[in-house]
Length: 269
Image: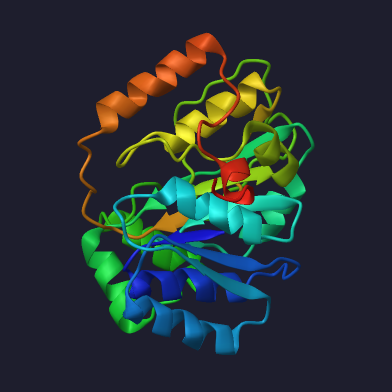
């Protein structure tokens, strides 16, 4: 599931990288938080070339409502396992295959990202550079020029799949831009909580509630990295209050979203 909002050039780079995955046993759900006609046209163009099932789930633009977009995308999905990906995070060729290899009942998989500079992002989007096909030498050159924030992951270094779980759990540093969760586990906690206002921490809230319901964490670092295209930071007016809600729920062991998947499934009174 790819979340997007009014950035069709980045979305196209991400979706086309999904088209060339070495494992094509998946579908693409574009969870659109109210983009305009440019994105609709982009999705129509992509759908014509898609080698896998592609669906576009759109909702009106009424402010930052990524939680709702992901919930509506979840309801549109047909699979048992959902990989959440942001519309500015370009996956490598084996992204799906590595997530599939790490999938395990009772666990979520938290992936990681490689940040790209503004200059490299501009070149990638303007020139149509296929980041996933770039050689290790090219990626090393990008790193030496300061265009990537990591060294080993872009060069293809992989950790063994064993030893990625721990008895300790932390919801910190888990981002929904690269996160895999079983659909049954999402149903169990009522999905993302749409009661969060503005940007920030609705993904942390989901992970906290999943943990309280018995789902543990598996680390996808050095296996599932994506290239995160540069963008200006979103307004974070509600970040502190949203974080406080997560801390309160972590202490009280809340498992259910206040407004989530079930509310979409029920007709309005």
